[in-house]
Image 1 (cartoon, rainbow, N blue to C red):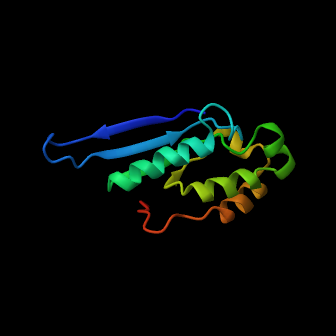
Image 2 (cartoon, rainbow, N blue to C red):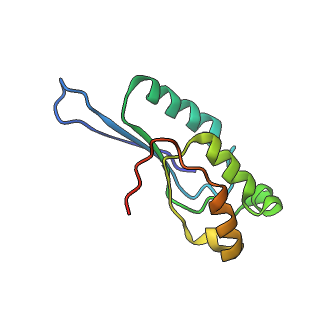
Length: 119
């Protein structure tokens, strides 16, 4: 699991920073490294102090380990919903269980309230 922080500010005195946290290539490894609990704690702390904080995933989260195999990705979707991801993209492994399963899982993903969707 990778977690990165990016911050952008116009001027030091204005402090309108934008914080973007992201995970990538999780492969159902929700307890590896920092783990989902650690990521959620960091993101929640940042949201408590800053108005512009987002959590995104860059794909390859569904497949991997017993959690992925036994639930065919459902448990990771439940966990990601609890994490309140603002944006999720698909990687190549999201298609490992087939398009029909991916469509079913996509319907289970809940978008956070207030999320901006660009079409």
